[in-house]
Amino acid sequence: MKLFVHKICSLVAYAALITPAFAQHHAHPALPHSKHKTVVIAHRGNHVNAPENTLASTREAINCGADYVEVDLRTTKDGHLVAMHDAKVDRTTNGAGKVADMTWQEVEDLQVFNRNKKPHRVPEFKEILALCKGKINIYLDFKDADVAETWKQIKAAGMEHQIVVYLNKEEQYKKWREVAPEMPLMTSLPKEVTNKEQLAAFLNQMHIQVVDNVSDPELLKAAHEHGLSVWLDVQSPTEGPASWNEALHKGVQGLQTDKPAELVNYIKSHS
Image 1 (cartoon, rainbow, N blue to C red):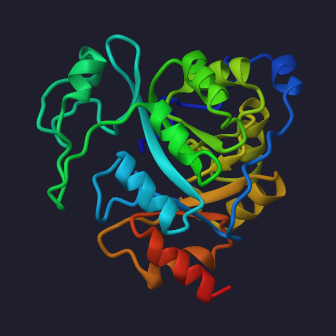
Image 2 (image 1 turned 60 degrees about the vertical axis):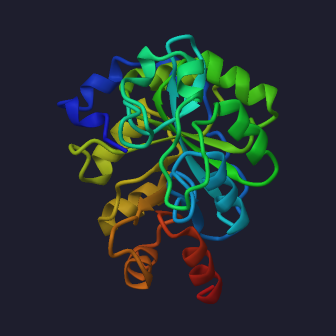
């Protein structure tokens, strides 16, 4: 994930996104139900034994008991919604080029790289929705897709109450609030937000439910006072009990991890 807010110089820029009347119209959408007190998010699926953003890594996330599977969403040249983190297919497949310049047939024909030598492919969003329904929530990292079409597919799958959308661009906020006002939204706070007054100003313009980059104790306290959940990214080469313990002692509500099975067990043993 990349912060979309680093390009914004001040909170004034956010005020232009929505009118006060528009902001006041929307209440606080409810987050999906989670099995664990501390939410466990499988980063790009449980991709230890299966390639990221595939049906296989999604199944692995379900099987290990994670609360959410993170899914990166992009759009093909002919309008198909697909799971792919990078703008290009080069890193994770045997192909080359931008997803946005390829047809669905071209993307579907790609071979996804994997360690276990089993064949995998890039899935359509509708396939992931069907697989996750009633089994696991989706942390939808909204990279490059049409909001209306995404919402249409979510409703068709009956997944309206199992998704949180992570915003990567400022313009995505207004679109989601217009098309699906009850969808829980998540983003990163701007670098300029360093105290409770600035946080209040930000939240007055962007009615979000989750943030992922708050670790300062005072700002964490202020976030909780505003009803915000904080889900920290803990995935790293050295991820393990020490980093989980450090994050949990901050009083956050969720952790995004590359080791969901181990984190689930850790949380169960320390609850």
